[in-house]
Length: 437
Image (tube, rainbow, N blue to C red; front, side, top):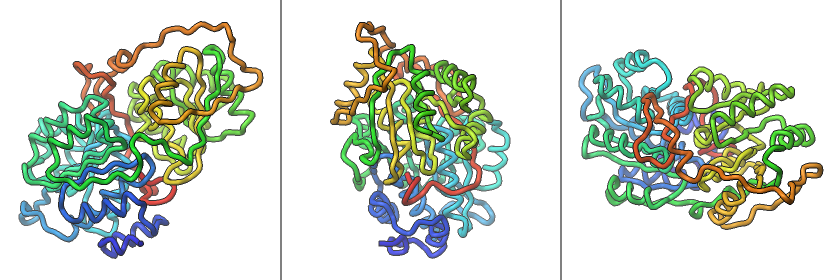
């Protein structure tokens, strides 16, 4: 089945085809007709399956063929709001809107924290049909009366599970209070946790339900492996693997911002180009690091879990868990940066004795053991003693809210930082093939 058979206009199909995609993914085959019908939708699919195009394409179709009841003269009311947890994801979603809507008379914008608010206010005042936003900056704009949400016809919560994980539930409730009661609601999530189901019960009205992958599954095409190693030799092992296996583009995950900075410095001192990306980096630094990594100018991008949902790189071959996450769901999202939409990928985890508990939790969560391979010359010390790592929830509470709003969250179990990104040009997030989400 082609995109044209799903009820999309020639202008949209033309823009999609120009990106090199002709066949919709399973999530798109079900989501596009459901969104076009005008009803609410609860959709889940593992990362890399084309979720973004699953809602952007039918939204473009609907807005381009209907007139807002609030339109008067040259006034252009805001008709669609897409909320995302991170700045990178917001920028990528808005890029998809622009690329796929290039032949339509629609305007879009992206707003997030970490950059000046005045240019965003000016853009909104010029008139926008589709707004992609992180919750914190959106509420800042609403407080300054720079955005009117009373005309919204379609609301999208993208990566809703991550937004809840990051403590955005209170901000989401504030946003919902500013929206008209009659609207279409689309909730997209990588996993269907109990919290997501509770949110869906409150938000959605008789929604269609789509789930194209089994709950909490990992991408089957990803080759997963664990390399046991002593904690003090992880950096040496990583550099050994980089050199021996010829890895040229590697996304490396650490648990903490300090750990990401420290590892990037060690790699640089040993002749391996690397930069760190996390919530404490400036917006410009994060955008620059991601851009250089995508362009192949950086061999390693060292990231915290803030980046697990917002980095979309064509044919990223390798992910390394330098440290295991202490929340099993984050492992799925980390390794999901490779193996996008059916492409091959590999993920290795460097696991010391301290992390054996985290590894057992991950294996229970994904319902499969991860093969172990000891690297010659890096055999773990059999007499090593485990040292305690911050327990689940403790480390996460050290984060702070992102999206342009500071201060620690109250009572949240995980960090609420928004990551950064720009809305630059280039190819959109793929509706099918290598990079779709």
